[in-house]
Length: 173
Image 1 (cartoon, rainbow, N blue to C red):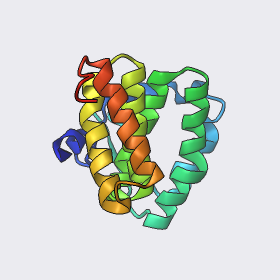
Image 2: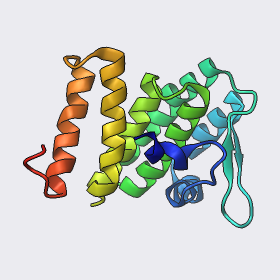
Image 3: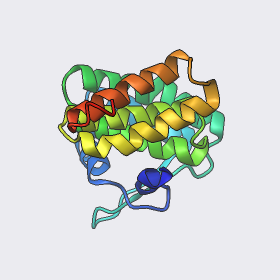
């Protein structure tokens, strides 16, 4: 199930969605603060001319990345999502997920929130089948961390059910 996260590993090129977000950043009112926060945390966006690029936490400490995600990247993602800019939100969510995986590991709330936001964007954009493996990863991790009755685990169960219904597997939902 963790294979669905392999495209977000730090040694993998940036996804198309991440590139679209980074290309659009100059037009986002919050982009200057976001770029400053990335720089302050020691996160390097190695963007090459051919567009593959990489994200490296470099010297960034885990607390610095946690703060970066919580204070800067999540508010920006929420604002983009609320404005209906789902493709840009997905790109930012992919970056958050990549940073979370590298700095904090999968079983960290910030990383799992990134998994869930990428899945939410995929489903919202009509790619529920692509969202399903991410929903399953998030659910498995939440069950490990909190048990089956925790509110975050139940939210993952509900979202997985919505994705299953979207792809025509209502009985499994």
